[in-house]
Length: 478
Image (tube, rainbow, N blue to C red; front, side, top):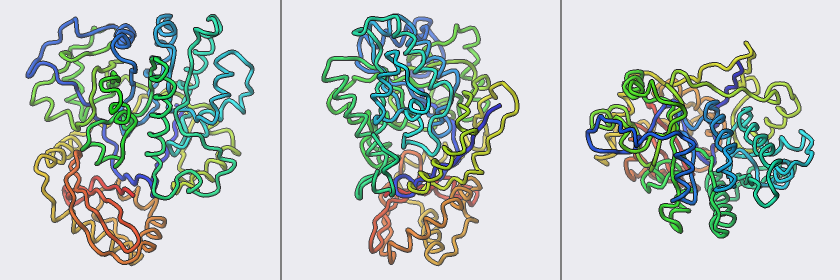
């Protein structure tokens, strides 16, 4: 087993402290329907290629466990999809999150068959700014290799083009966070703006089609969900303004909130030929099931990619760069310090146990299901929780005094806060005197949103009311 663990806490962009929650938004079919018409289940590759007949873009994403992007079966599916001869003929373009645009020329040379030294090629996926640890899974690199192999047999004007969607960053010239994120902006905004501009310029303006492989957060279009999660316009929301209905969204099934939900969802899919694409009407989407097992709204999903039962899904192996290249790991630490990410090198916890891939860990706790469903129900009331505001005041006061208390935070949240407490304490002190805390609304995830005004800053905090005396969701937007 190869594993790598790291917490990403970006103080000045998105401070998101929460237990990982396995969630899936199921598209609504016929109300209270328990039937699964065969016509609504298609071989996945056929279904996705058919979607391109009516949509310019097909977006593939997952929202399992806080946007983990290491699902081996999903990465294998990407490779199988581009290998289908119809993809090069009818689509021909892939936009990926796991590549930095500054190396677009390198990628172009590679997929067109030129010899590219590995030390140069790997910068494509290791120089991105979208995560604490860059995409080091073998499955992503395999997609590039598959495109290269396919293109070798195609005329130049019929080859597949891979577009690197992350904003260009020359890390050799980066000395401070402001070199990447100017004052008044944030990293998510920069990333979404860049890839939306790329798609507008290279796909829409040229009458092309593209497969877009990005994390689920970049596909959010619901205004309330956007306000709760990022506070700015996502890639998909920007595209929707100019091209309504252009994206066909495909969610990957990776498990629901607990084992009972998984079993209920999976029980009639044992004989499916995999991979399968589940269209509206295939879901167990009666009201009771949706209330208990569908935990979050705001993602407009058109279909679900079903790759097998949740317990059968596995993580993609890591490239050896992640644990053999000491110079690269030191450089990674330098970048973390610049971006305000607290991940000691020892926390990578890399182990090599055997030459197989371990089952992908999924959240399967009934307690988590009931807690999150209870929070989500609060969004309909839009009423502030006095207890949440009191906890927020105590938390801020503790940091101002240099004595933060973690007793009122759930264990996972407390662990994350401790990891960034020095940086957060410094920031809060630099903001000056606390002037006011004003309730704004209840977010779609059930957290209270407060505008906290200091002398020199006006951050937006999201905090859940206490459940069993503990805060289970806490994040900060600047």
